Amino acid sequence: MEHRFDHLIIGAGMAGSAAAVALREAAAGASIALLGDEAHPPYDRPPLSKALWKDGKEEDIWRPIAKAGATLQPGRRALSIDRAAHLVRDDAGDTWRYGKLLIATGGTPRRLPFGADIVYLRTLDDYHRLRRSVRSGARMAVIGGGFIGSEIAAALALNGCRVTMLFPEATIGARAFPKALAESVTAYYREKGVDVRAGVTVKGAAGAALELSDGSTLQADAVVAGLGITPNVELAQAAGLEVDNGIVVDAHLRSSDPDIHAAGDVASFPAAALGRRLRVEHENAAVTMGERAGRCMAGQDAPYDELPYFYSDLFDLGYEAVGTLDARLETVEQWVTPYREGVVYYLEGARVRGALLWNTWDQVGAARALIADPGPFDARSVRGRLPAA
Ligand SMILES: Cc1cc2nc3c(=O)[nH]c(=O)nc-3n(C[C@H](O)[C@H](O)[C@H](O)COP(=O)(O)OP(=O)(O)OC[C@H]3O[C@@H](n4cnc5c(N)ncnc54)[C@H](O)[C@@H]3O)c2cc1C
Image 1 (tube, helix red, strand yellow):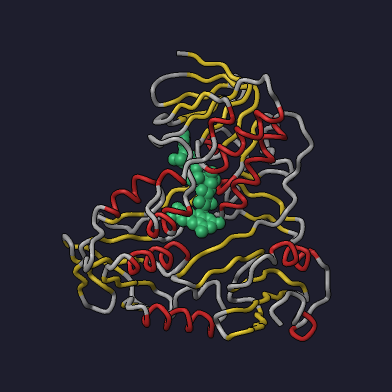
Image 2: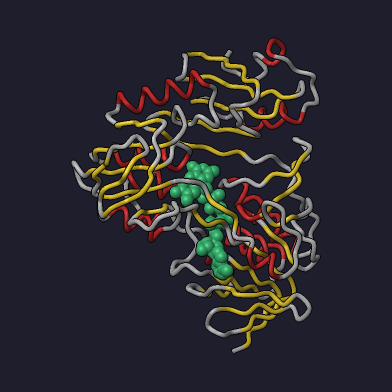
């Protein structure tokens, strides 16, 4: 069957749904379709490792896609893009002709190189699968000490599970936080009853037992992993679009083909404030990029020109962050209460490259302005630039 739309969106996720709504606002009479390979309509992913484990209210996660007045085709995977014909083929044999196309295909979780019954937490179905194993006293192994691993470990512990965390680094959040903060977070997890096994990786699995790099075996009722994602660039690559750690887009989220845009986790965009390209895996970037891409597809001048921020909740600790959080940069810590409330600045080449707002709220705008400020800054002059002195 052949379909024809002014605007076609591949990927009915956070960026895709934001784009559909923005398109409708900018182009009242246009026809819009979304192809999504999940069985569900678009939903928020962050609650899968946070809010759903606190209140379990699934009715709150759905994106407001009805506003878009779009044709939503769930359970359908786009297989190829014929740029010359302006046509997408899907896995049911249908073809979709488009005027403008948005690729918002997100990413695929990295997997361990051996088969095992592991939940790689990315989708609502993954969440449901994990949820079925959760009961008081269940033994849960969490692989990965980054954002997803640390969030889901806290969520499972709060649900009465006996949680063991396994990761190769020395601490939780080692790649993002300065050493003392990362050590404090790790100690906090241990206080909360999580068995944190730093410097330990998984070598294999035999049934419900994980074989660990320290020679021990871990018996678990369920295993969940957060090992990062790789961007879903295959469609773009096969269609000959420029790809470099993500689909390369300009400030208007246009790919190397002016009729194809990209947004969200899959897009590599120019971050003017940092003077380089970024590809990030965060809600704020996905939703804002989606919204701007929709407007640009409708012919508006709506560049994506802001630095994204992200947030996380770890037990009762929470933070927002802007820019580059790389523990290898020079870090300047400014605490109101050590490791409970304060700001961490990340410096490189006399510029502020990132800001971590630890239990410090309403400072995202100020942090963005500071990162855009050419400086020069050093450890002394940056102190006090954001509140929490
Ligand atoms: C558990 C979890 C917790 C998170 N927590 C936070 C957080 O606290 N803070 C934060 O800032 N960010 C968080 N994120 C990240 C955030 O959710 C993502 O950055 C965001 O979802 C990216 O949006 P997207 O539209 O680019 O991709 P997605 O939301 O992943 O949507 C992409 C969609 O495209 C579909 N798709 C892929 N290929 C095809 C194809 N060929 N045909 C059709 N459909 C296709 C995918 O199945 C998916 O449904 C979290 C993510 C997860 C998984």
